[in-house]
Image 1 (cartoon, helix red, strand yellow):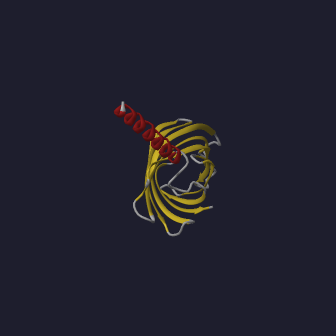
Image 2 (cartoon, helix red, strand yellow):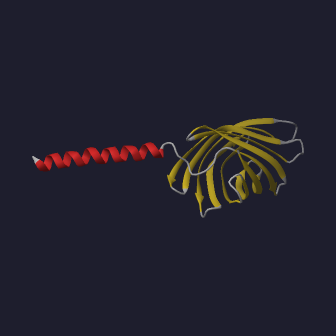
Image 3 (cartoon, helix red, strand yellow):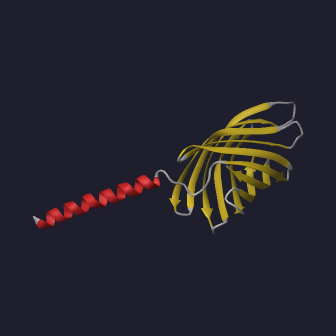
Length: 181
């Protein structure tokens, strides 16, 4: 009888400990998802901006626009999620609507992008990450991805370098400046 009571007590207390742990995990994040970003792309040369705002402890909305300033643009906007994997990494995902005009005959294409990624702290000021996804805009129907590194000089400002693979403007190198708010 005593062993049964001890076993039942252990099950009840361990269940409470796991419940508290899951409650904390559901509301935390390792990164700031409230930011404005300015960026310059190389090969082809593009200029762009992005903004992200948290709408829930584990969700955010995001919008961005890029252009070569040759009568073209790529606007994307949508919703994303983020969840901590451990104390130094977040698992992320986004579903974005795209509106793209390549500048040729002023034909506007619409489509979507779905991606999954990870963000990881390598140290107190260095962040790395990557994402892979699927892009379907007009005749562009492809898998795409990106890898990046970001140096956080302060809590509110960071500089980054991102390599985009098979994205809307093809393979591209992006230089970014991010301002947290």
